[in-house]
Length: 72
Image 1: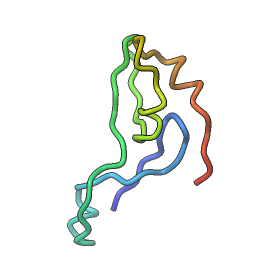
Image 2 (image 1 turned 30 degrees about the vertical axis):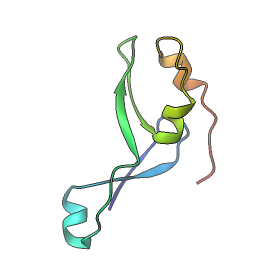
Image 3 (image 1 turned 180 degrees about the vertical axis):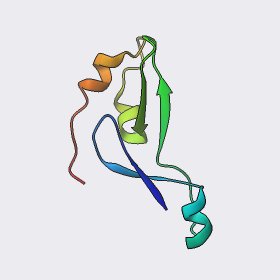
Image 4 (image 1 turned 90 degrees about the horizontal axis):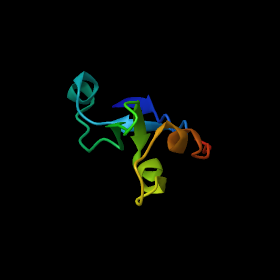
């Protein structure tokens, strides 16, 4: 199982697939997505951070930078 740090809250979340799942035989989905935002910036965010982004305006770098950090 691979992990990647969320650019919003800094938690390490699961990345599904890849060579690490081949050897461990774990199955499951990735716990986040890489998003390209309206200003052209790109971030890997966990689903909790994606849910915290505004729905009523174009999401920009400032929105991601204002997300609170979480404990691991």
